[in-house]
Image (cartoon, rainbow, N blue to C red; front, top):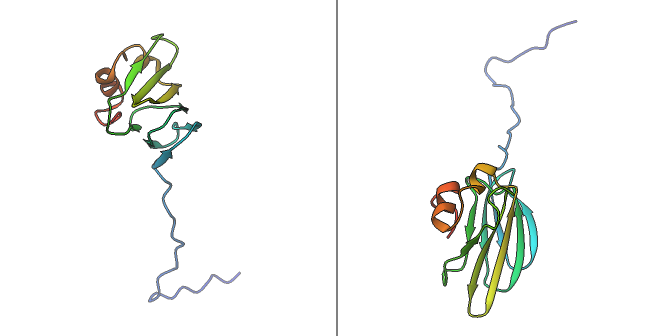
Length: 125
């Protein structure tokens, strides 16, 4: 077998590879679900009345609510890896059900300050 001839002047062609995404942005305008476990995710919520479920919320993820009011954290069990974040203003209520959060974080979340401590200072806006 004859080895291939390589021209020393012309570099070999390398197929460009697009790196995989590391973040995603989700525009939330109505009820639905989304999995945040594989990418750092930013959820931009539009004012309205609806429930939305996010699984796998963790460090690097962001809940971005309308500017008119600060959301409330509802954690009825500190060991079920789930909690509720609720935003309300002018008769509109957004309820975000977070599930699959790390047990160590769940045990320490009781308000927006502890939420930011667990997931990062920008995690809830």
